[in-house]
Length: 194
Length: 422
Figure 1 (cartoon, rainbow over the protein chains, first blue to last red):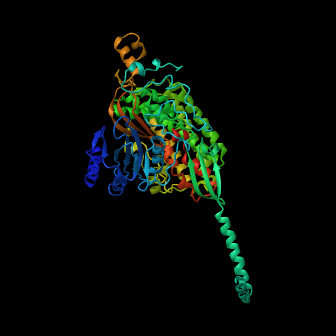
Figure 2: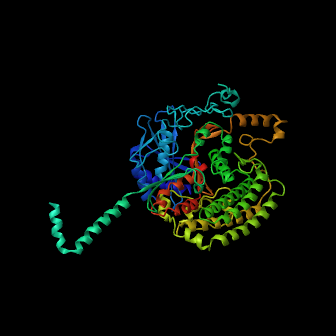
């Protein structure tokens, strides 16, 4: 199975040799890094029509806070004919967090892209209806960014519910992630009153 | 000057008068067609099974546009996951598809195990029990889905019938996991506890009864004229549209695809089990009902095979660095104490990398995308919720159908908002 996936991914790489970096394989899954995010629509259309990736499983986004191209958009493709997965990953800088939409290739991209826009603040150019989907219209922040605190932020909208910070910042039983000292990450190191 | 012209036309007598009245009529008609009614459905409506809101644009009784509004149950599960260890997130997966918490537990644990590269090392007994859990959860979820669907289109009795059986499943789950609803049964690399004594026999008794219940449900619905009239050729989802919208699970198979992750990418011991994948032909609400009924029968078949082949042995990977050691050893020996301490405070040590794992859940493909930077908590955990994606096909399904078919279509899609909104 993974051999067929590698063969297909090398076909895609051959067609777009300039835009696609060297493939990475981890746990039997192939990831193709896209160096030029502006051509994502073209590459996806090629993958769908020429290579049979007719099903877009998911679009995810990752916030590599503190690294230079801050955001990463990850496309998970699948083909019902050849039963192979393929992952396309592209990094984009924070300054112009914009990627062309792939809604013209797969309709299912519509809601996935709206969700990423809602949660991470990455804009999809050419999207027919780029509105917030999980948060309410007019919410000012992007909650899945790493610099958004877990307890939430107070908003300037007094009439909207849940605009105050959560009462227990960080949560009393929540382990703080990161590579810092474990002593400070442990739940017991948190004072509930603060 | 127009008045003069009118007089000239009068020469032709009655036909002109007819023409004028026809013109005014068509004007009236176009007036009526131009006036669309916007109707708000939900977020609190019995057929939305939770908190889905749909803004419908109606032309008379025909829906011309539907705009689903999700997010009323958004709890930020993905954000929460980034802030805790992998094991601590398992209880949150109960609350995704809260009609099949066991299946979510299994899918999430398998995703983390794939990231750690230990998914092939799971002991056989653990794999068999996990399959039993998944299939029990599937029966439970489909029973609810079908019962609620039938009730939406007017058959109240079915709901009571299926709920009686669900109650028995909950009793079984309670004796297995200690909780009826929020099971949290799996652990990274194993299970929380082994099957209780006599559980297999009780479950086999239940399976016998539930097969009778399926027959009764079928007798109530499959040839019921009212049910067939309300579901047949309603909400037709052609296969290519279903694939385009990323629809998965029973909804996709009702449209004619035989894609089932348990067959095409078998995880656990699904490759050793014998079962059929029911496939629909039209992709209407009726097909979606038939597919679910048959899937439950196949689940019963699978559980029985699992009971037959259920091996003895450990239920968790015997590795202190991934799975908590037994409590009595923690209190008596040094190494286990250290393992326990590290696992509880820091969690498992996952490598760097990105993985995606999809499992065939009752609602469709439940996928977890994990971006790990190493350590005990995920850097990013994306949940690919099948209900969320299936709901995105609603604007297509509802457009052009009658207002009263909305509840039938919603019921046949069988979605859960806890999963959709995360």
